Amino acid sequence: DAKTTQPNSMESNEEEPVHLPCNHSTISGTDYIHWYRQLPSQGPEYVIHGLTSNVNNRMASLAIAEDRKSSTLILHRATLRDAAVYYCILSTSGTYKYIFGTGTRLKVLA
Amino acid sequence: DAEITQSPRHKITETGRQVTLACHQTWNHNNMFWYRQDLGHGLRLIHYSYGVHDTNKGEVSDGYSVSRSNTEDLPLTLESAASSQTSVYFCASSESGQGYGYTFGSGTRLTVV
Image (cartoon, rainbow over the protein chains, first blue to last red):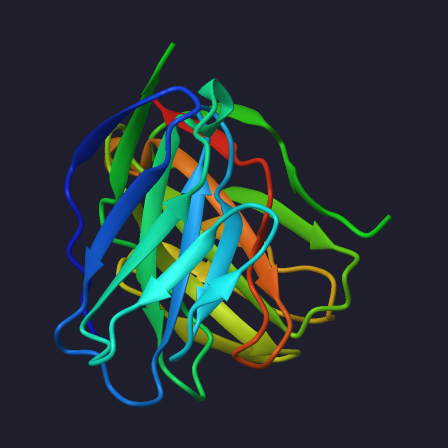
């Protein structure tokens, strides 16, 4: 399973954009990039996913590097409710299991 | 509304006892997964299933077993509970296909004393 590397923690001010990076230098051509987040005392929840092109949804945007060796989750305006651990995960075509890393703990400052 | 439920939410058991954690989903998802999360760590995959009668070992399967007799349920059994299995356990389900994400349950906090 291809691995991802994320910073252990990041801080952001409320109502400012947040860019959460993820390196996945061993990604293969058919690996999807998924982002999940886990709020305190809850199970993880889906945020966004993509393969090659940038993706947007109501929660966030996903920017994927042209060589696909890295990606960035963008929260356009951080709120206190966005304080969570964010996980970047790769999934290989044909398998549906996720191997979680340790994620990035995002702290949002009021 | 479709949902995924885990029970119990909290359980305390003694070392050596057999324990079963329940996971039930009404999404009609083919895929189901069990993870454990230890304090301050990420999630580790225990077992997973891609359909009825299919089960597969994950990263940390020793001491755990699962069986899938129907689409809705994937119970996780600890054959002989050990203190090292004190953890929060999360169940998840997903549809087949790369475009589908996981839906997680709320977790079961298990303490082995």
